[in-house]
Image (cartoon, rainbow, N blue to C red; front, top):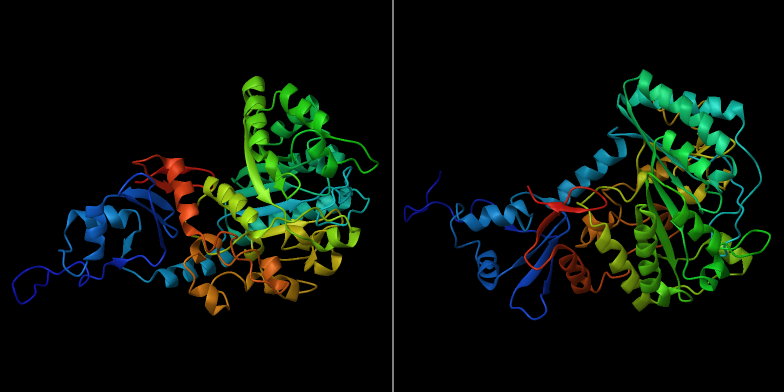
Length: 457
């Protein structure tokens, strides 16, 4: 260990330690302590005035001081270039084959007519020939990637309009995974109207372990937006399904929050909790702000979009529930090994594009991930998404404290010309205090998954 002229060891600063550029702070109400959330490490904890003082004098304290170990484990102090690390995560997320992920749409048709939906629905059902193409695509992706993890999300349209497609394709994909020595898991995005015990049992057999069902408020409020295509409410049917069926997998109840239903957030969360207690099913409440969409605007039935203050409130509530470690990409659209497939076999990078054939980059029949550009029929529709993984071509985003948290935001909206900042960008204190409230007064937590705050190692 080098020594300075006085014969002492190096200071923490001389050893390269410095405060993280991705720390957010907030005074804990009723206390002299401060909560610090580190967006790169995904940690949040409470610190005393003495600890804060030591953080401020890294150029004076010895590099071996115990506070360095405590702060570095939480990412509050670091000895490396975090922006470079975020950009490395982005490159890795784009190309590193950690998992092969397929989002499969048995149909683009839907039995609902929701005014804010981003899709223009069309009738149709995935044919046996297209199913053959999907299985062959999965095999090519597993072979090219060399990974041993296959994940499927059933999407649409409303995927449960054709449960036979889900059942038959699941059997074949699970067999493929077993043959290749891969783990297999699945999830489903459904409106919940067509759930019955037979369907639930089939999904469980198909290794579905998560489902998302949207409820837009209580009774009439929900029915105003989540209505049947031919007219008629759906609240009673959906809630009856969630209460009365024995569902062995976790169900996230998504609340699409807009100006017309945001007053019912607390009431709906309480209802979800009661339904979980009554049924024994694992039901979780998840609020998500509604934003505009081209399809909704064309319909002329746009619901009231959230004003800035409301979007901030909902966004903080949403993100504090799923606080994660810093990541290099916002979603699978920026990852080569994540692909969406519509009922005709067309391939897409973004869920919000699966109803728009002009946004497809190829077909399940002939796209080859070993040669992804040459085998793509519209390579630009592939590369424009992959090139939005970090490092972002946006200096303002690269300099922003929120970068590890948002990873540049929705690539689809960025491609449409907007910078999709988090709604609470200018109110970091609210976000930190929401995290602090989740982990407790003296909590020391780090995120190990997208759904939970887990103890730091």
